Image: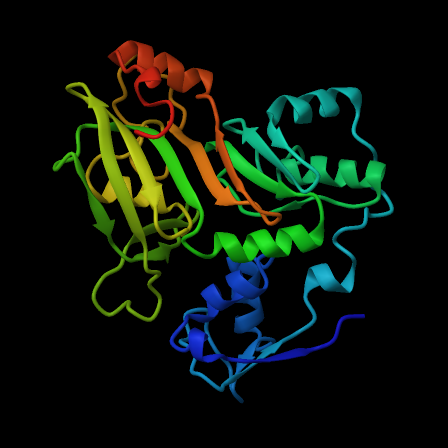
Length: 327
């Protein structure tokens, strides 16, 4: 069984938020899971309770309880895990953009969930469990994409690789480029959105919005660089580079600019769409560049999904203009 761990905040970590510290040291811990651990007092900073946005001070002790993926080996299959069916294997292999002895880089389809939920039974994590049943070692997600966001996602074949990549993804050494089609045209055509976000609960689920005065304790620092690659009267083709990795960051930031992403039913992008445009989220993780744990660089680009290609054709956008370095 795993035991309680105690970590001392280093000089380099002085001033770091607790949630970011966890991203570096325990990348498998989701924000929701960390929030639960903090809320129930299982994670402590110094001698007292803490929040996910608690700022750390050099020399403080962080108490980390046994974590769910440590009390049962996450890299071993569950007893009821079944090998992939032929159809599941074909589907998984159809997503592979790059594979080596340490990682898979996949092109996740729009509408395909990364992890399961109450009403979600078909998801990427389930396929990874099937691979574990076959190979005896479960591949692990390194980062996540929203269900309706398509594009590049990285999976580590072993826990040690997942840990190394998780720490890397918490830094600025990973270059992420997303493509989106938005309603209207942002002005200026190129810029930086530095708008902190807070989570707001609603009848249709959680969504992120710009922080307001008095919400500083709950806000999450969020920065996105954007560039309009082409535009028509009612739409713009965007290149988005997130500097931080907050939930729904790109979707909330585009809505904040007044140019929500086409088909975004949480952030006003599904209203008054042109008749020919399919009402699906037009957000695609286009390119990912990161150092490989064994050396060298992984640079992978994912082709656009069909519904975005159709929208590009409608507005005359040519994806071939920005295949690599200029997007």
